[in-house]
Length: 496
Image (cartoon, rainbow, N blue to C red):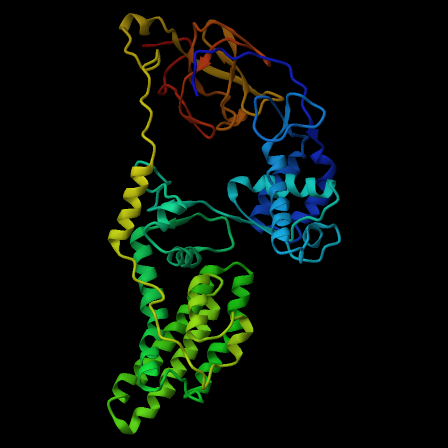
């Protein structure tokens, strides 16, 4: 937020966490397979620079938890926020009547598996700070921290104005969760690559895979069983070898799930769905049902098809839990687990088939987009300030812009964004403190020509006096672009 209030420098006492004291154990942990190789490689940059003490306090006003024994100091949010994982586990334990406990997962000697799934923008907090805090407090580190990339929509960042900044609640007002769960799974891998929610692809893929391939198997077979065979499955499979082929795929699919190769797992499952549909197309139960002499084969074929569908449901249950629950009801059996696939359902009664998933229609997706656009807050009108108001040519000429050559550039200790530059203005040399360190390395600036505001009043800063300002474009951070002249300009030339 911008205001006309000038900043005030204050001295403040802060509390620090000695992160460097855990450097050896953190290096061992991050290189022992608990994070992906790419993340471990990125973390190595921090280790090479040396882990610095971590400022864990903030002055009031601040949200969060007050530091005991203080009046105006609060814990930094990334110190206390991960503790919420532990609090959530305690809450779950209470809801379940105490059959699990915090110590089962966080005690230093706990043998259970403990995983975090996070976005790549908070990787450092979860792979350096949080494990160190856990170790310092006498708890165990996570078994793994899995880092995902960002989500784009139609190839772009989420946007409220475009209606692609979509909340979960808005999505659920128009579409079911299973379609989106499957789409994400079909695109997710173990790395930090971003994934894109392309609405056109979303409609095509979910309709083709979930409705056209997967659910279609049950839809094609169940009606024959309920209408012609009193809802009872046959006592035998028509093609035991084919069923065994589906069962044998289990270890490979489980391995892909375990290694977080979700997209590859979905591809393997859909290959099996294609094989099941191919079997039904070849046996054509709708043709067999027309001839009394082959009528009994219809029960065998459809029993085979429904059992193949049941195995596919078991494989998809981690992604489609609601569909799996409906299938369990269809087959009148309890919760299916991975081992359930080993024994086919034979001679048992099934329920009446109800649509498990419906096709995603384009108008439903458009409704999500429109509702997201409608629900987006109206952008606040930009107030007319001295920055936006029109100025006269005389006002502009008051600003003395000069060409300068950078003759020295060094990092400012204690300031992550500042560089101390010595610039040659032709008839004098000046020191300029500039917040461009996130975009430019000191050594790449030496010899470069820039544009300097030469008649800016010197500003006394914590790290020295700045005698000018460099002109640059961009939003800040890594998006900073220095303004410079074409070849031939000399230091001291005025810019008009």
